[in-house]
Length: 354
Ligand code: PMP
Image 1 (cartoon, rainbow, N blue to C red):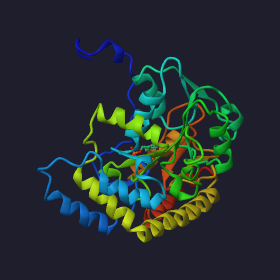
Image 2 (image 1 turned 90 degrees about the vertical axis):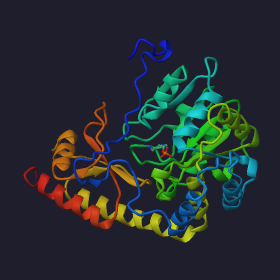
Image 3 (image 1 turned 30 degrees about the vertical axis):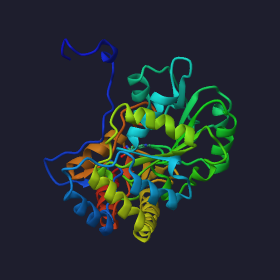
């Protein structure tokens, strides 16, 4: 730390993103990226947009907003685009929480939530999950706090039904409830259908996973006009050009190519079902996942050991060295070929243990 670093960030422990090693070519199953390339239409539009990079991008993202509003059946001023959904989550912490409005989220969830709370100096409560890693909805009813819930949750992959989400939103009419739907397209129910009913609901999604655009950084929030206006106040006070021209164009292409999106989501779901069945045969317990990853622990072998051995064999998964999580590994669902490589490596690792 330099002697110039602001006192307010002295104790800040930043978020640790999944490793992106360059030492060798890994089978990368650690950061929930898509194994499929972006839609050819998205790629074409991005290339065309590159020809005009000397010009600033449109801060209102008008073409993309128009396309997305049609796609989701909402008004143009009910959506905001951001630089990856991490951006909108941070904006929501800034816009809807303060000393008098603390924030609550599950104690096992996206690791960025406590970092955003610390970064913005917001008091926060981490609500424990049940023994079986599910969220207890009762813990969130009428709690007078801004609420963040990832649905499906990460790293568990477990989803809450839409009616439960609705009950939570309804029971907190004076607080914003943010539903982080980064993984919703792989089998959970989206709360976008509720935004016209509840002015306190903000739904966030991303193009990083189901639309194969993690490297483009494109996320968005859908909510009432007033909430979106507040988020735009924060956005225009930090970086109005947060979506670059190529990403904006690629986003339009990805939305146009809905067939490609649907086909890829179905492929991930099929690969997930196969992987879960194979893992169970090898003695793993796998939490019921609605996401493009599974959270699995072996009956006899320590999670850290599995992670390290897989890495030596050229396969990266994500291991969290945290209470209740360290027995597990989070495994991204990739292509069938990648999953076969994983399973044959795990067969070797588990052979002696059975
Ligand atoms: N929410 C959750 C639950 C996530 O796991 C991630 C991915 N790390 C994000 C949001 C952010 O994704 P992105 O910024 O790529 O949209």
